[in-house]
Image 1 (cartoon, rainbow, N blue to C red):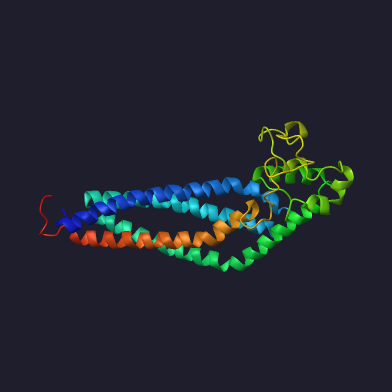
Image 2: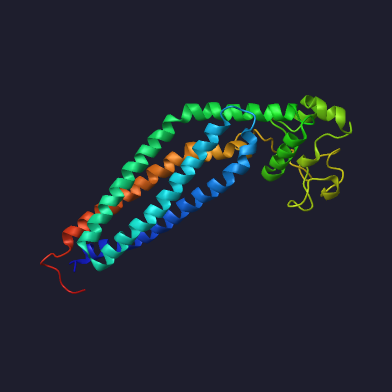
Length: 273
């Protein structure tokens, strides 16, 4: 039994720290799982460029790292919580060692992500150019058109760089469609988003000829900075390093607390509390 108010405070702080740590593991695993299952949906935006496979593979790799790290952290918390509340030196020692290994792994991941920054910038630009190519060819390939229509609906965007791209660049679409249409039907809001992308499902029948920010998605181009196609890159390849460094700082505090608690356990000055 540990002695003194400070030691007991450290004991319970470490216990509750690991409860929060466990919840962090749940969040990491959830983010990784969401990214893994959503990656294929975003892949449609990368179909026209050579770097799409590498980009998608890297996204899935990071998602797997998050999932594994999340479950690993939850398992480690078992040693931290039980070791603290039961005052078991062996479990606390194991906890400190495992957290140290996790910190090293996180540092390696952060460095690797930082090394990919230049390549990711190139992939992002390639993704944008792929979107422009698909808009220019819109109306000439039914399979590609359906894929792009689904993308615009699922990510709620219209056009590559601007919603007028279709009238300006999609020559086949202008030739084969009503000249009064300003945007394709897929740029418009649907009455039932889960149903087919057709004129009969339009929330506002006037949308294709008179699109507004209320009846369509013309307010967001698919290549907008921070928009649907680039948001994933910004979150996972820029902000993620800060998240990892923040976790490392918290984990270091956990190691210090665990080591101090090990020193206090079995102290001859211990008295019942």
